[in-house]
Image 1 (tube, rainbow, N blue to C red):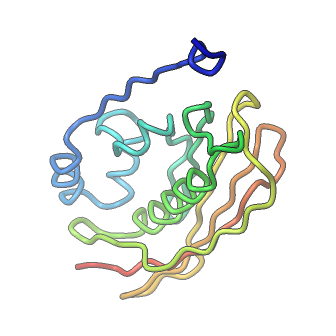
Image 2 (cartoon, rainbow, N blue to C red; image 1 turned 30 degrees about the horizontal axis):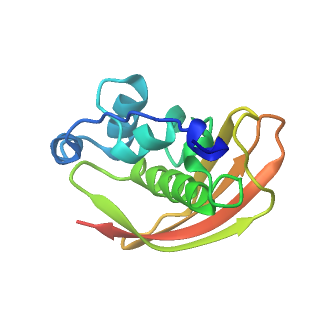
Length: 166
């Protein structure tokens, strides 16, 4: 057995049916739905379970998600994969937009631009992603996001556009 084989780790992820959750969410305003997820009354999205992401704050037009990255999210060169930051930023941008929508109205990301400023590593504490709506529209919404580490250092920023689906 090699050194690498001796260091095998595992991670178990469980989730609930995301389509059933989405159907329930369609009966609530976006703010009500996101608040219910944050409060644990509605199951989170499976991707949140995979990343260990939880909702810390939900307000109309602004949300905060927190996660503590682990080694299962590493890329081949020993740091958290950039896709994790992109996914968190896409999530907080989309969910910030969602908090502004009435029941039965959805959204989809159509553009995401991410700037990576510092590497993210496991074992350095929680990272906090904030998303806020910049401009609401009837068909398109614009939002921005950022990720900071436990010391408040800026790790990544993003801007995104969401199409509103009725």
